Length: 326
Image (cartoon, rainbow, N blue to C red; front, top):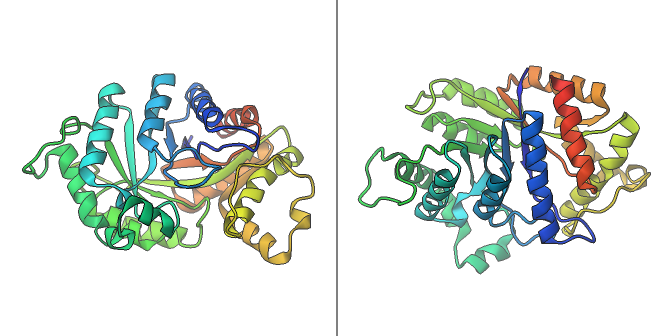
């Protein structure tokens, strides 16, 4: 059985609050742990009223308090928004609180539009150019190899598992060069999936932290009692994708019967394109879709994303998926 993990955006529902979203994220992590998922990751996004995971390290601490064994972490931290020393301290602190459970996925995108750079008082374009250097510095701060003139405390010596995230060939090449495990964001950016995994595996250089290439691929997964119910539940996410691509993101909306049939051809084609890495349906449909995707990618792990308006149905989706794959 392939290892399954969970990616959660800490989604804020229409009619709900940030407090509700954080409570729901913790409940989802408890469910994932009980169902046998390997990791529970949250992602850093900013200035979006429908996403409550901007302070990712704080959210991970909240998740850690609710769980006992599942690995927890960021999928990911957008390193150009930060400096490596502060991230080393934050994740060193998390490792001290939840020893041996902390993952740190690193991304190059800002996770927000250009106004965010102004709010941070940073040139995010220039910071993105420094990303490879910052990754190396962050790893050195955590591992002590090489030893730097200053130590992060907490952070130095913390066995935080670093991951490289990506949706293009850049992340694949950097992960291969540094000998890091690689997670591909195929749940929303499937175009370069096959090429990126081929590049990563072909160019991989073993490191003291990873001897062989290790791939995680992301899927959108909504599992329900049957295909019809799952398709209806998935319209909440469909509405979010359309709103985001239209420049008008908001909170997660309730399911809407007939939503896809109401869309113009261009928006429908966009949704179908993004669904290349997805499993939406009842148990058998989800099992078959995940099996085909695992065979296609040769992934060592699959991380499942996908929100439902009713948090209880997202938890049920994780349970159905875990049983289907096992």
